[in-house]
Image (cartoon, rainbow, N blue to C red; front, side, top):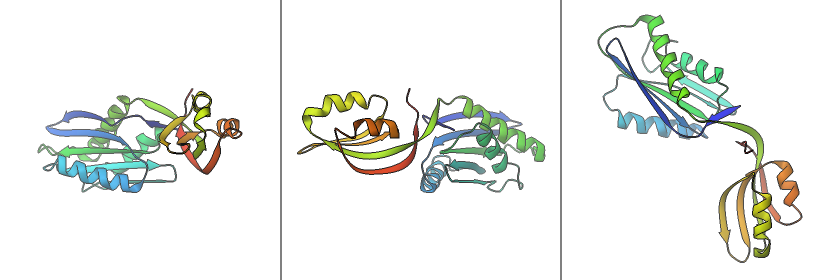
Length: 193
C-alpha cells in the first residue's frame, strides 16, 4: 500500500483537447469534495472534471458528462493498479472540437493519470497508531530519540510535554514506561525507515 507526498500536475494535448491531470493526497470524502470545488473554481471554463479517488475503506469515480465508463473507471483502475490509497486524481478536459471516441477517451484519461502518478514521490504506508502522550520535560531528549522513526504531529508545552504522534505499536510499547498515553487510535501511517 502506497500514497503520495505532494500534489502534482501533468498537462497534455490530444487532438486539440487539453487534458490536465492533478493528483492530490487526501484523507476523507470531504477532502474529495473540497478539492473538486477548488479545481472547478481554478479551471472555470473546462468542459469536464473527471475523477477517481481511493481511501483506505472507500473509493469512487465520476465521468462528469463523458460517455459512460470512459473516464472515471479508467482513472480508478490506474490508481488501484499502482496500489495507491488516500489519493484523488482529477483529469480536467478542455474540449478541442475533435471527438476522440470511447477508445480514444479511455486512452487519454488513462495515460494522463499514469503520467501524473509518474511525477509523484510515493511513500509506503503501514498499519500504525496515532497517540497522544504526556511526559516530564526532563525526559524530552530520551523520548525524542525513541521517536526518531515516528512522526510528531504536534508538541504542546505546559506543565508537562504533550505530543501527538504517528508511530508503530512496537515504538509506542518501547516508550510506555516513560510516558502517559492519553489515547490511541489505529491509523494507516507513512512507513519511516
